[in-house]
Image (cartoon, rainbow, N blue to C red):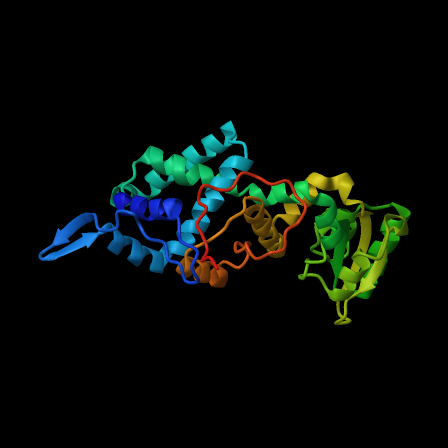
Length: 309
């Protein structure tokens, strides 16, 4: 299996295609035999054709993502330790099954650690790095705000808690507890993507200011009352916390993917691969996007290639 994967990866890396409309990647040694079954001989070309149709797009995208992560994210001792802990956990939990799985895919433990576990940890940091490098734009688009929200099912309870919060006789956690609210009374970060909030509450989050202090917002159902305070509406003052929250927004994750693949000039020439990536991985498919003024990065060695003209 490892040899077969190497064949496929090699095809992606070395295919240099003529400029035709429906170009298809081919191996220069496609007729080289890999194995025989009875009278049937399987060649490198046979294996490549089969794998390109089944997992060619995912292989290309994953390889490029790994390449980008290794170039953009510094490998730390903490990552190494975390990867080793994961490896040990797999061995402990799955036992011989895990070892046999590695054998079946032609890998040893060190290769699995270096080629999969560590790169996956690095890849997890690509979205946070994208947000950090583009924080002003991301913050403007998603408007992160720190606020404390207390939820009450009774308007009387909400009014009583509000009175105590306004005169300072109780903190948020105590006021919530003493008036039948399960809210913890801690400050949290919310964005325009916080769709678990009532629309009226979400609107107030982005229109009110810290100077407004505590106030009540009835939810649209008329049965729930939110006592709230805007703690901070300047994202720059809680940037690290904001990045931690924003990295979980799916739209931002997609934007980050497009950003990195465009920066590394991911380009496809093979027609079959081109169509599959365009269909199944739209955020990785960047070669037809308009050029922007940005610092170019080295082109990924996975430079799998699109049909020419």
